[in-house]
Image (cartoon, rainbow, N blue to C red; front, side, top):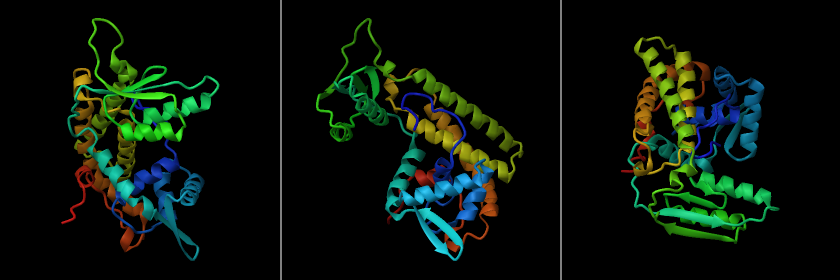
Amino acid sequence: MPTPGRAPASGRPTAAELLPTVLGDYWFHSRGFIPSAALVRLLAELGVGADATRAALSRLSRDGRLERARRGRHTSYRLADALVGHAEAQGRRLMRFGADPVAWDGTWTCVAFSIPEADARRRARLRRRLRALGFGALFDGLWITPHAPVEALDRCLADLGVADAAVLRATEVPRPAGVALTSAWDLASLRAGYDELAALVDDIAGRLAASAVTPAEAFVARSGLMRAWRALAMADPLLPDALLPAGWPRRRVREGFVATYDALGPLAEERVRALAGEAGPDAVPRYHRVADVASPPDDS
């Protein structure tokens, strides 16, 4: 998982990472079962070997994240029923990320804690949990965020049995010198991550404009864009606009991502359909636009 406030790490994606991406990109609202052979072919296109994909499918099924159906010698998978609502909510948050200005009331949530040096494992676990909540480390035992995840913070402290902790909602006293509170996050590294994604978007958009993208290339490019966007959304602590440096690129990069991801959709779907083969009427792959996922379903 990327660390909030730091640029996401690059590297070859795993089958366990790509499977939810592919399912979300082309079967977001589908409850059909997708043949394992189709998923193996799709991930092979993304550089993952058949054995790794089959192992990931088995592991995700054992963990309860995927449901498995068997017909004769053929096995098919879909997202587990219990996770559908959570996955759709996560998808909406991901596709809305960066769309709106982030307001702020000027108040910080601070947690100060003391964990004995001998309890290094619990200290490390607490730090990971705090980062996942968007906190940054101002000092070793003082973590801050401009948001107010108080209930989630209370659960975190209780889960880890951290009793020596204080949670405050406070405002900064301006001083002519001292530590900038935003130094709790590595914004320079995070901005580099945005710049890297912007360069990728510009390259793909240029090739699309020149009609120089094949369906196979569109599928690979769209999966890569989604992976990069998800990593940035997880890494960005979503600081309020008032705290960010001038020209912060989040909204501009989002606009480029949305336009390019949507434009790749029809070509990518063509390739996915060719690779998926006869997945069945309930599991026909269909691309979606960002707006299709970002808006909550119409229950009227």
